[in-house]
Image 1 (cartoon, rainbow, N blue to C red):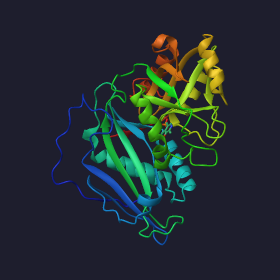
Image 2: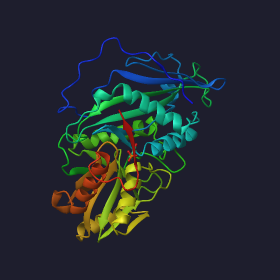
Image 3: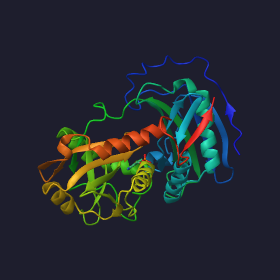
Image 4: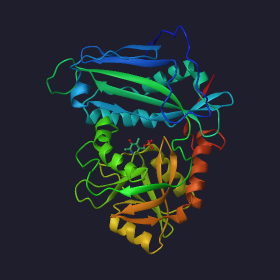
Length: 355
Ligand SMILES: *Cc1c(COP(=O)(O)O)cnc(C)c1O
């Protein structure tokens, strides 16, 4: 049970133009913080004005990268707001914590902390089409010594950012390049954990891809560099000859909540969905002989992101005429419809909060 102390900001910030938000550029007036030590457990839970966090120069996170995070969204509804499957994020945060020897958080406390913070900064939830309040809970190891060991002290923070559409171009198909040199994660490593270190390893390939005009990198597995894993910060799905194929969760793939939800919806719609190893050769062959009908990424930030072009070994392959495929569009409409409260939430995925 949390006993949150609240210190309200004395002056509130001027809100940005909610039609020109971009992603992760603006932050609300408050943030949630809570400290952990082996002796005291989680303590000093508080909501304070958004601002800098003092960190000791020897802090574990700065030297050894002990950091995990979550990403989720709140959507404005007629009488309050709703969040999409927040207990799934709570569970995944604990799975990530376990892998990085960080402390776990009671899922009820995790969701309560988010609710209390969003309630206070409710006016920051944008209403324009395609917008939402992005929620970023994160935790870092905060021991003030340079010794390498499992964390004794940690800090948990939640910040909020009103966001527009993830891609500047909107829901247009993106160009993807298949990366052959760098790998994001390996089995036995931290690929299934949502941790900052995975991103650090991915930046170089992302930079090179951007310079060549590609918006994301499609990662291959780190052992054989043969099997498709995921795309940038999204999971990936392909419609091949009528069937939906998505890489199985081998340990180096992040278990996305959008992925899981999309699989459930597609199966309900009667599609055959197969989670398996998919080699890049099989994928390129399908693209060449016209069997690759649609491709898309799934993730909280972009929800569903159509893929219009795949580049492998310097050869570029167009997917569904570089247009949004029918099923991709239908899936986007269904998922965002549930999240924005326009479609019936028959699976009871949304946590509704009345204001
Ligand atoms: C967060 C994330 C995803 C998508 O997960 P969602 O729960 O759907 O947002 C996919 N891949 C990586 C590497 C991620 O960090």
